[in-house]
Image (tube, rainbow, N blue to C red; front, side, top):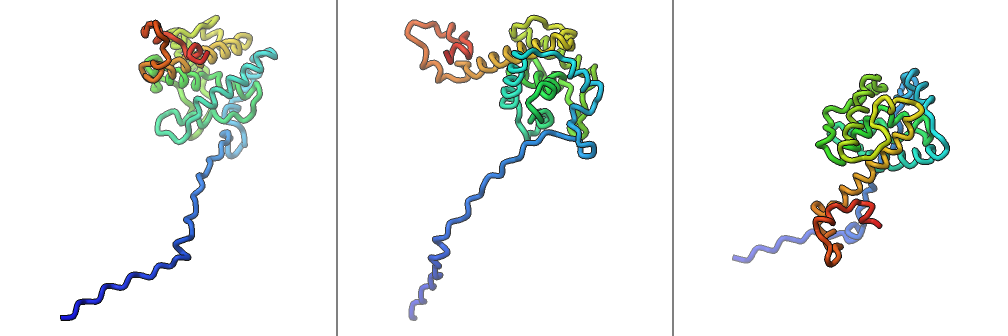
Length: 230
């Protein structure tokens, strides 16, 4: 018997083989503030009484600069879209439509995002299940009762984790003459706490390489994030 002929190799079209596959570009999701489709109104401005109250909150020229920093920091740290947990509420608060006093103070007044920030630092102090969130489908500013509950939770938790503030009184938080100063104190303190958490030697053992000869490792655990960076 004659051997069977070997199967013919498929002819390779080199011109096609040389063609590069198109590189898929990652589509960047456009960040847009949440507006009412019908009234074209920012959702945090939909309560006229709340909108008018926000505009009574005082801020001097220095505080106006500081709240811009508060806005930029919280946008970077808190904005995390497309998540399965309640943190998706950050899509409502960020991006802030305009970097001005009215819009920035409107975002932080109800305490929702600041409670979320404390939860990131230590979830034992603020459970997301007890934070008052706006309705994600039909967002509307939280009621005064819900704001008081968030502020009470936020300020008591801040005090418990060691954030130094002039006052931890909810009434002061809702006082137009004191609110801005408390907001700046609170976010500055929380930013330090979050930075310190990220420089925890127990979670980042590579930091132990920076321990100097003769230093007590237990003392090193008490170093703050700012001290690590200095």
